[in-house]
Length: 102
Image 1: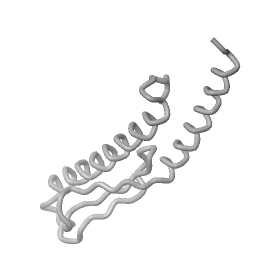
Image 2: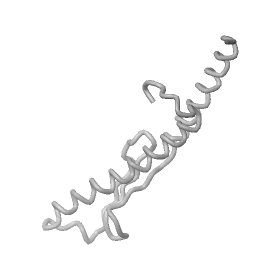
Image 3: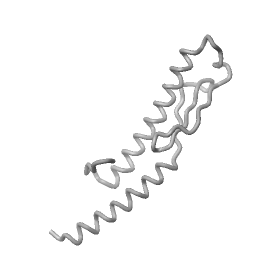
Image 4: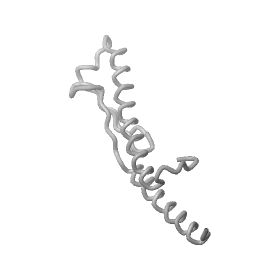
């Protein structure tokens, strides 16, 4: 086993992972509650909420419970898109090797 070669590969993988991590931080994922007249949430690859848009027709005191559910649905949809994208991109680099903390 050539330790020098293993170390070079590990360093290369680390650089690739850092690059993908930066790309994911800059990527915006949009989730919605279903339909164009609902709630839209945008998150980045770190699942930080960036934006919430609520259609004017939903801004009614009687719609409070429904609106809260729609916001959760939209947020979870956006986060799921980010999770899937992260797994695909990181998996392409690690080729199935589990790396703690990722």
